[in-house]
Amino acid sequence: MNAKLKLMCLIILGIVSLNLYALPSRSYSIQGGFCSAQNQAPVPGLLVSLVHPQLGRSEPSYTNQYGVFQLYDIPHNDKPYYIEVYWGTRLIYRNQLLVQGPLNLPMQCI
Image (cartoon, rainbow, N blue to C red; front, side, top):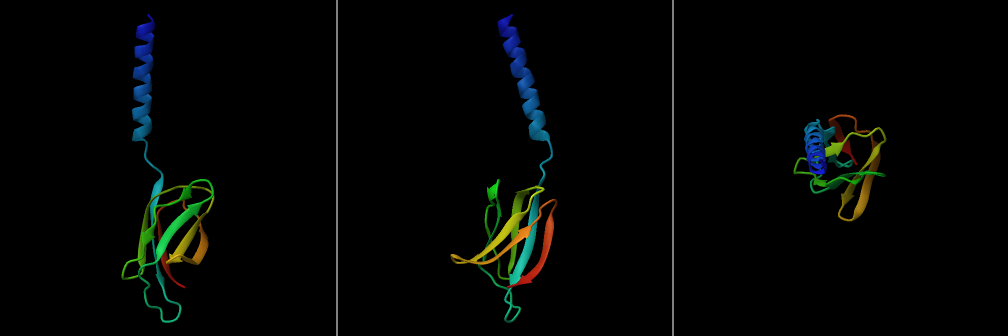
């Protein structure tokens, strides 16, 4: 009887695990861009990431030749993230950002 009970518990645990894995993820992608405030030219090579007090830092992205970046798999959250932009090791931009769906941010001249 004990072996049957253990087997039944393992089967139920497996089914629950599969169902949880199959639930749709509430993570989103974010796209935006940065340009120079002096001449409005795109700024390639900036390091962009999101920081959240509880969730930590996202996988970073670099702006491309057009100044555009993309961040992927950013979890939905009711509390704001901070978008941080670095030129080398220098923080040059930081602002709050609420992520409750995919975002296409306007070009920001900094």
